[in-house]
Length: 124
Ligand SMILES: [Zn+2]
Image (cartoon, rainbow, N blue to C red; front, side, top):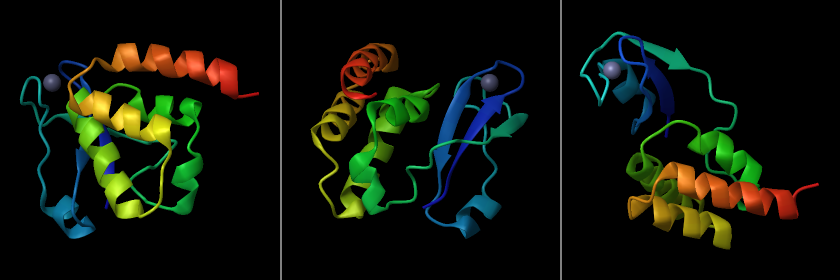
């Protein structure tokens, strides 16, 4: 399932849109969720979690941070949930907790802080 990050030129809002297929993407005319402008720049994302693979189970806290970077909590949360559902593997406690917290509407900043703390403990 393709997903793309956009930055709104007029207001600077960064957000992610998800499409069921590349055909849907071609047909879509994305607009900014904040100001409604269609003057958008597509951003290149470093970590694509929209492409489920067994590696997702090993997605580190640091990698999750780059996914979380700039976006709406609930949008990202539902992406996490979708990926978790479609991956068919146990993505780990951190992943599940992050998805749940996002979907409850917890702020990305707060979750980021927690993940940063975990990344500091767990990553080399
Ligand atoms: Zn905007």
